[in-house]
Length: 404
Image 1 (spheres, rainbow, N blue to C red):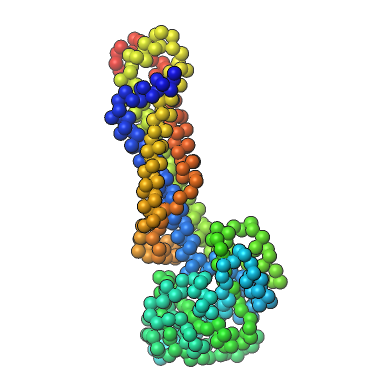
Image 2 (tube, helix red, strand yellow):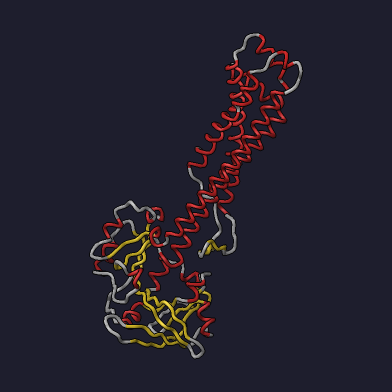
């Protein structure tokens, strides 16, 4: 009976109920879209970081990331690579050498980080091929790939010659080689574009006197989520013999902090939208009560208990919020699908020192269509308690005054 009365009262003024449902539904839709958009931004942020240079994870000699000593090579690197090749978690891997170097041209010289890479394997891990603006990756041992900012500092272009100087491992000797610039890349990062060069890994091993040893193995997981899970056994299995396997969460902790800030932001936005939804529901119920003052007074006069009137008002709020949630969910599915397909292109937007090159797309998840709708209904029913208590105290004498 209570729900029948609630439904009748809600439909008494169809125009107001429709407008209120749309307003609340738009609020629910906004919360869902914000959540999905933030999820898309988080994924885009992580994907941009790992695909630019880092990879989903890396294996090094323990302490190498701090010291960058040329001698700190991965122990039993070939054995590690063989195990990785058979690991079902790993989609691809790329061996690297990393060392400090000085690159000079006839006009200038710059201290840089020299990376020895296998271009074919590297392009699966990172988006180096997409970043090349002119020319291509080093195809021979005497070719080098440089960043756009570095090329500008050195005042060089495709085909020009530069000289690279490095310190050899296990000795105080310097190694110096001449290279021809094969390509110029741009990641959109000052550090990567201005202080990093790529050469063939075999050439770098020769220059650094490393033999077949390497400093780093960049990894790409089958699933990016797995790479961010610090509880899987993968990290312990490869952190042996003095080596260490690290997830992107450990390699770039600032990204995790940024993600946490994003979640704090969505919580605040959801709270603000939730309060607006609550005010809309409260206003709608009070307007409905104003129209039914005499009716409420009569109900109290014939012996209707206050609890029944409170239950009726809460039921009205529940019916209104359920209808609104349905409307909001349908709108969110419609607009979310469009955003999931086309996304929003911010044109190489920078967050911190990370450039988001790809459009940010909406990402659906179960939380959006369970937590937020249920929370909206429960919150609406809680908000309705105050109008319900007010209505339960209505007397026939007060009702006849037509005032609140």
